[in-house]
Length: 111
Image (cartoon, rainbow, N blue to C red):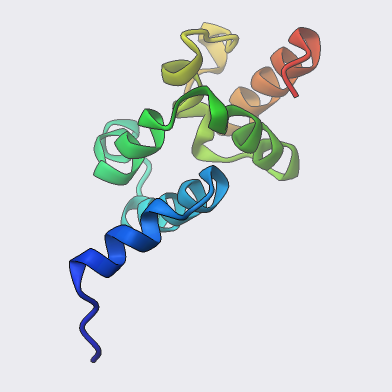
């Protein structure tokens, strides 16, 4: 097993585009907790928290992912945007939450 010095990893991370960093964090997050259903467990993971810290620049990436299929980004979008277009009755239903976010995106021109 090769050891990569921390300095080299930090330098590589600093040359990542926003989407590359987002995708790297997504892979880390999904491999660690993607098989769980608990929103608190999913949202408390450090990679998820780092994704949130990337800010509004990742919203179009998340919405593009949601167009492909329902995903767990429905838990990140309210925290990043400060909005939640999901009706109370649909909360917890990933498919319906996805539909609500895609409707919001289309209506607000956020794509």
